[in-house]
Amino acid sequence: MTIDKFLSTGQPSDLVRIVSAILLTIVSVFGSVFNTLVFVSLLLRVKKKDGFLKICCTKSFGNDIVCIGYLFWPIPVTFLNDYFMPHMFNAFMGQLVGWFGWSIGPLSQVLLTSNRVLAVFFPHLYHRTYRFAPSNVGIVICLVLSFLLFIAFFPEDCHYLYSLKDIGWLPEESFCTSVRRSIFIVSMIIIVIITSICGFLLFFRLIADSFQNTMSTIQSTSRKSKNKKILFQTLTQNFLILLDTLNTTMTYKLFPVLFFQFLTLSFSMVFLRAFEGFIMYAMNERINKGVRALLGYKTTDQLKTLQGAPSMMIWNVSSTSRHMN
Image (cartoon, rainbow, N blue to C red):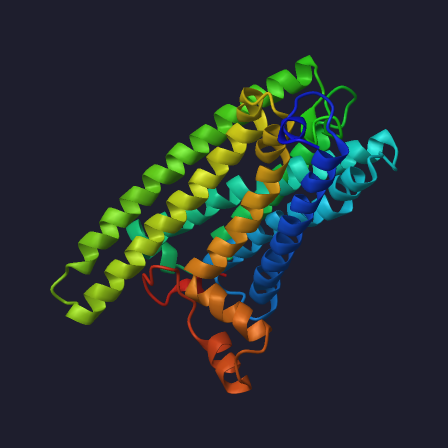
């Protein structure tokens, strides 16, 4: 089969379908493993009185739903070239992966940004002991909103379905999905703009704090390094949200070649969830240590030290996360 046939438009050939399924399998397995390790390490290995890490745990949970969901439905359907379950199961998986699991990511990003702003700009509020911790309340709201999105679009003609013809998730053509798409795009862009602005404000505030005379040269250098990580992680996660939003709603329409549509429409969604799991692991020292401890890279004494140590955000504002129940 020539490259021209492989990059053809219209119905997917067997080669395009199999290559797409293999790519989805590789990245889904990678994403499932990474996000599961992050999720379990935060759930079991780190003190629960840490608002920032609990939000990271929630984000990895949403990423896991997307990655594992691909292994249960789109991948076997693509390999077999057959919808081996009823239409409503396709609709259920679309709601679970495309709305419940996916929406947890952007909502968690808002919570992470709020947590950082509270810690840096309002430390007196951050240190306060609450009957119901703000992080817990925020996580509950995040999950409730995601669940409402999950059940809100079950009516007929409002489904989000996996299409073998397009090798990707697409909404049904109806007034319901048209309105939903417009609200979705505007909401995601607003979230990205607000969280990015807050990320820059936090970065400059912490840069200013690092030049305080009370800090030694070593402390100042360490703070600057952590500040760069703050900005990088925040902007990267915001960029992933925006990129995935555009890919699943508009970008894929720019490519007439089916395989390129697959890369932006279906592959992008699971790849970015896997990449985000890696970002959390690589950029957050606490998460990194928790995962390594879960895999047995730490001794028992070291693990106890990790569990008992005060929780720190990636920029090490202070050891005050224990006040965020």
